[in-house]
Amino acid sequence: MNGKERTLAILKRQKTDRIGLYEHFWSDTHKAWAQEGHIKAGQSLEDLFGYDIQEAWSLNLTADLDFVPKVIAETENTITTLDGNGATLKTYKHHDTTPEHIGYLVEDRAGWDKHIKPKLTLSPRRVHFEGYRQAKAAAKAAGRAFFVSGVNVFEAMHPVCGHINMLMGMAEDPDWVADMANTYAQLITGLHEILFDQEGPPDGVWYYEDMGFKDKPFMSPRMYHDLIQPAHAATIAHAHQRGLPVIMHSCGFVEPLLGGMVDAGIDCLQVIEVKAGMDLLKLNRAFGDRIAFMGGIDVRTLYTNDRTIINRELVSKLPEMMQTHNYFVHSDHSIPKTVHFDTYRYFVDRAMELGRY
Image 1 (tube, helix red, strand yellow):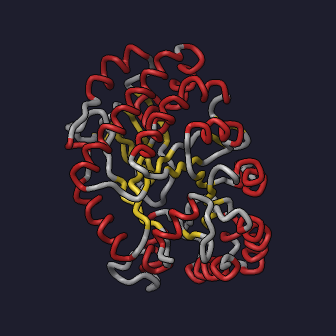
Image 2 (cartoon, rainbow, N blue to C red):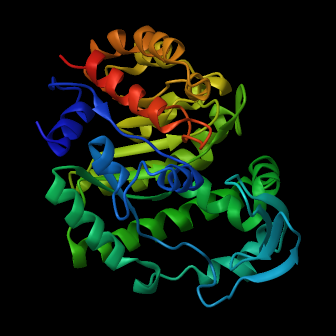
Image 3 (cartoon, helix red, strand yellow):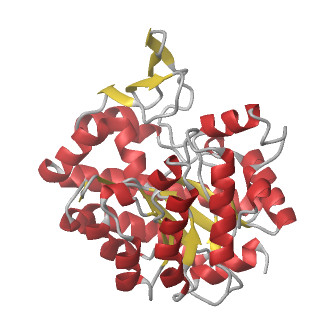
């Protein structure tokens, strides 16, 4: 089987020759490994490790497409900028991390209606056609499954108002949050229509929605059901109408939301973060007859660069996951540069040895 055949079969929980394989990395990991001579110029990680999937991040949901980001402050280690969503964010220059949220132009419904919603127009300017075209061709040539990637509504909303304002809005002005979610759902599906009509459809859609932190989701299951799930259902149904499976990523503890996510139609949950409280085997026992899983391998075992520890982690999870034919091996978070190249190479090779039927 090639990567595309294997991926689509696993997402349907059908028997394959082996488990699936994919991974995400921090950008400085790729840089470090290339400087060490492990990655040749122009060589992709998909080719190097034989991944089954390739992605293309193809939509730009920034509110003001014409806004040029402004540097507000800069130090030796950080840079603070104002972006086209009216958000002021601090990022670190020397390592990858989530930006620090400094402030937002939009704090409530009035700000949303005035500054953001009117700018969220359906326009081809928001679509990266060339990157999509190139990634699709590369995936086809390599026999990989090709997924168009991007945020869904939760990850689209908080960049314009911040997590605190958004989550307070869920409690105090739920109609505002529902309007934001529906607006972004319509924008995302409309842009996919433009993209697919011009360049042809992908093999699937991959949505990123970080809806949890350690031990808790950002919202209650009821709030998810009332405010986010309808938009998820709409975007997922749009993909399913074209015959495209949907993978949904969420860092953090989202177990209480997973039933609603499954009801919304997801075909696969990724990334199943162990240190946040997620338990791959527990979730598979509860939902493995309805969805596939990708991830759930504790990346902290790779931090050790100790093959005995890594092997123990793989042996503790892969045999059971193989029984349901619905699993892609993947760490539970992006691989940092502290993981040695040879360590990651061992991780892949050992997983493929254990994961062959």
